[in-house]
Length: 221
Image (cartoon, rainbow, N blue to C red; front, side, top):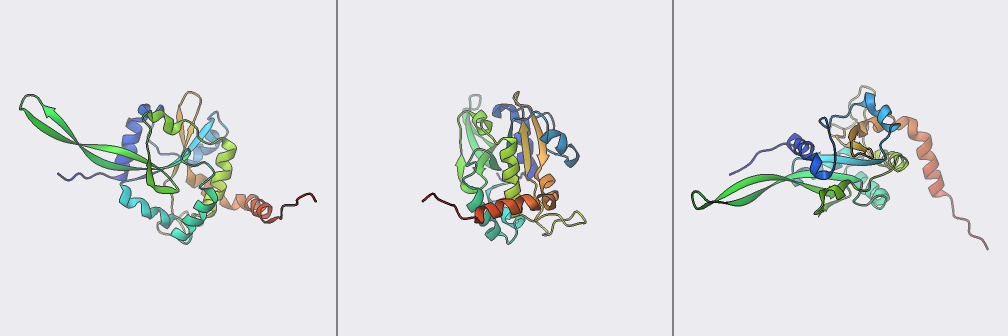
């Protein structure tokens, strides 16, 4: 029997089962730009970025969100892949598996479809990350300073909204969310779009980072 589900199904499944990941999500993952400022200066002490996809076959659409497509993605990967490997930036997609259960009344086996969530590192789509203890997915995370630097570099390669609020590319708008998690594992969300709209304000910081990279390292004689 074929099963139909959507990206929102994956997101809903994540929210409903948040407690199994050690998280307290009290609302749908629908971050608002207006609240981002309060979250960023608030009490959360670790941050994660999450992108949801319906299934594995939808993952390549991520390339459309980058300037120059897959080339832009690969450039971002080269710079950021080693920053917080497999601990802070996830892509989560759904997959249905068939579970066989014995029906004691009829003496036959029953087959049920169950949606499972697969976690992959954003810059390593092919390798599923698995933990027997699901709370380990959200154990480490980024500090606020690390998040700021990471997003600064990440959005440098991505399409951003134009003055009318539309993405420069028809599929460039990102649905990525930042999970801000406090010491009690309460979760608030920030849309990555918040940072993208501030990209022009980051230009001076980006220039400083690039200038620092281009300077030769002076070694003592």
